[in-house]
Length: 514
Image 1: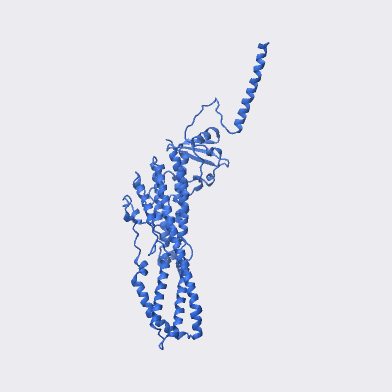
Image 2: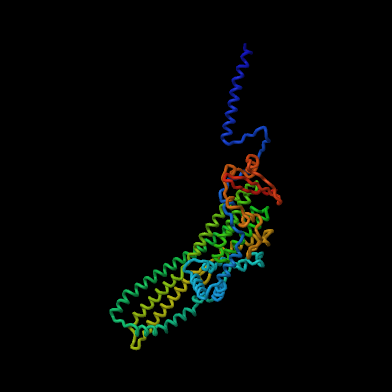
């Protein structure tokens, strides 16, 4: 009897085990886990798992060109046309003489600087370093301390600070003051009551307004110069750090390292001596920082495995490049905060009113011939010299890159020279040009070419669960589980995989063979 019950007792656990196995498989399928089956080989992967991308991908910056040097040169040549050349150009285009004269008048108004336009952008010259040190002939020379010397400004820009100029203003005002008193005495007659009004109300009010306006002007200009100098130093130091990380990341990829170095050299050239208009045109169409970020993203997307050091370098670059963009935006904002010519026109009017008020108050103490006393002439000459000195001082500080009061660019220039020296010492250093565009793009050329890029609908990407898998897992998953994907190998030895997304577009990725 015991032997007859043994099969029945063993049958219950068997059925229970079958139910448990069925439930386990059902829960595994619904949770999205992949259970290895006996129908296919089990692949054990030991490579480093990559994190999910945390920044913009290459698909978001389509249309950025490798360089806009030709466009910049054309704009600069057009902005530098003389009035005669502009009239001839307008007449050649079919305009009459009145329209040509109107174009010259409009050009002169645009160059005045009261509002922003391309002529104002191109005329804002900058100098964060010595442009001669970026020439190809001296690019490989090691930096020395003399490279940080400030370029001597034009003598006409600093003549106002010389002693002969200040003395000439004092002497001229001393001899002009009697003539001014005689002219005013023939035009107006001032009695004692009017003298009291001028002496007690008009002159002190104009003096307070003039002092407040000058203090406000100097505060704005001092703050602007400090911010421009600080942001330029921060951007240059960050760019130097990015250069070192880029060279370390692409140590085994000389082609990619050369292209990245050329992108950095383009930005160094822009910072060193190009105008604000050149930089803003580059930002709109060929942003060096966006090109560098896309190069890192492209490399991160195509390579199948990374060492922990490479992962750390990529994460560091993706954090430093937005910091570079932020420093550049603050620097450009501070550079654009110059005072317009109308501000200095107000300063001239206040200065004239103050001197006229002093002259009118002096008319009551003139002699029979209308000449003021010697003491009044000395005071007027001193006031004139001080007012002219303040005006030229404010005018000079409005241009932080020329004149007497320039920014101290030694900090930024030292980092720029370090970048040049680092790139020059690489094996491809002679191929990188700091004074021109250099060689054309190779690694990211297809992504940046606006005339051979994918249609606009291909720029849309869909974020799926496979986006967070390693590149090797993601490629194998697309090839094995997606029936709408196909792969093919081109002549260069790289494999292109095309996958249809939910919207019907094709997402193309390229994997280089080792």
